[in-house]
Length: 408
Image 1 (cartoon, one colour):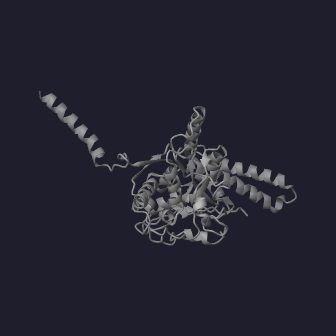
Image 2: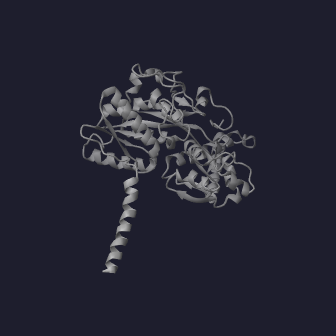
Image 3: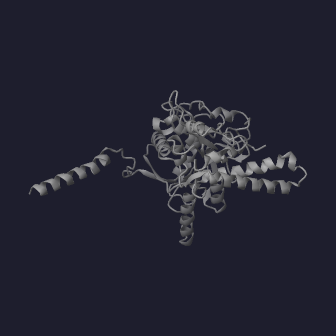
């Protein structure tokens, strides 16, 4: 009897330990109530970004249409995983002669992935180009091209929602302990002392890392093209040598890798924790983690744009073919590109139209909005605030200096 009592007591304690975390955790997966419209979005964005845009758009739609909206986020992984899901879904839809795959939007990733989906006929034209042509007009707030990168499609099937750069996140403490100077170029990550010290992500799983590898090769090709010692060669020969130089640089970087993670967000986390000396990541992740871990007098993480080795790229959004809620999907795109949506990227936490949660974007938003200047707000709502992000003013003038690259 005594043993049975002990057994039940032990079982009860185990059950309490399992149930307590589940009971105390915040419910972030609430299902929609009857009559609520549902918007299905594939995205590689983090949960905090999804939460901010879901809350902001739901509030916006409720105020303007007196309807509730439930955002059904689908995040199977990075952009590469989403591409595989879309490929499989549309293949099955085409075989079954269906219009779509039961999803409305593709939000976040890289220009090559969206261009590929558009070529396959899986994206539909965005109505925002007709409702707000002034946003995309020559000299308007959302340019067609910026630093050599396309920000919206010629066929109007996608548009960038914000801007990002690719660079180096590094630990000053680890770097100093190794006796190395602060990194300023991609080549600085190939030093023999960094063997087993680099945190890298798998370019076949992360669209941002694949783009970074591409930029490294392009930078080496541009450097070879302008190398005085190679001016006696033909342009094709110089480009071929640059291609080889770029691949060799990637090989030396890979030789210093501690691992190749499936998730690009793991890289700045491990660097900040001291598990790696440096790594590659998007400016947003580097700056966000730096805000979380750095303290006055203690700097655990720094993000650096490598000289002549990066560029400003767009983070697109598009409506999928056969969307169950085409009107709602087009409205979401318009909201993301509007002053109210752009303010989520660029305003301080707690500011009007800015992020509501301090853990979402750090103290300030660190992603650059797509718009180069504030747009006029909707007539029924207050005018959205001017862009105030610490790095957003770079959009108001042509890029200069070695850290923002046209590779020229």
